[in-house]
Length: 268
Image (tube, rainbow, N blue to C red):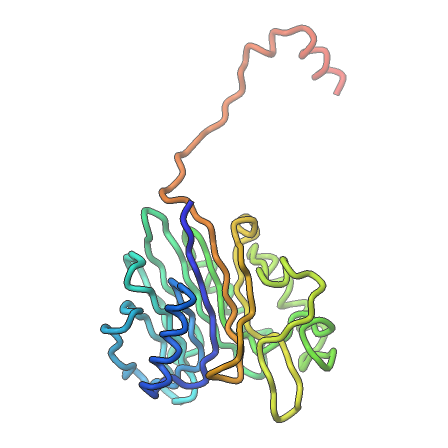
């Protein structure tokens, strides 16, 4: 097995070279291999050249309409990754990247949801993901909503209706996606964002993995707030070094000649 270390972080602006270097150094110290960044604030199609960075492979989605948005995915220089396909958003709110790492296909999705209408936006995005996804799917980002208000908000309530929350939860479940941190911390209260305006804390930042891969996730943590009003979320995904061999099960038909087996089958 090999490890793939992932981090998602709403950086609230990354145009400053000093801030970029500080954040990337922290990622490097934490041995993050793939980073999902939200609110990069890069101008449309004018993301800075980061080829000399420790994270030298970058994919960006920038907004044609606002410099306050933007999402990016960065890959560490020591992590081989071959791009197969990419899908960006003209509003800079989502980024889909499909590629290969050591003969395994990954679909990396970075999301930055709006402050209103999260339900309709997210359900539409999940439909797009379903058409794009291939291999191991990882969805990360800032959804701007606490999925479990009692545990995920210091005020114990959500800004959206209960029916909207249920619709989001059903959409994630229908796509086989699990909130990795909550699945491994079922009763823990912890937060990823501080609102100075409302003097409250909320858990808005997530990493979702397919339910069938949850048992391969370790060290799922919420980090410290240093460079933003958000906290980074990280996890380690244990993956095979090579693609597993295909195996087709076939019934041993000789057991059907056994009288005891035949009697058991007839009884059932």
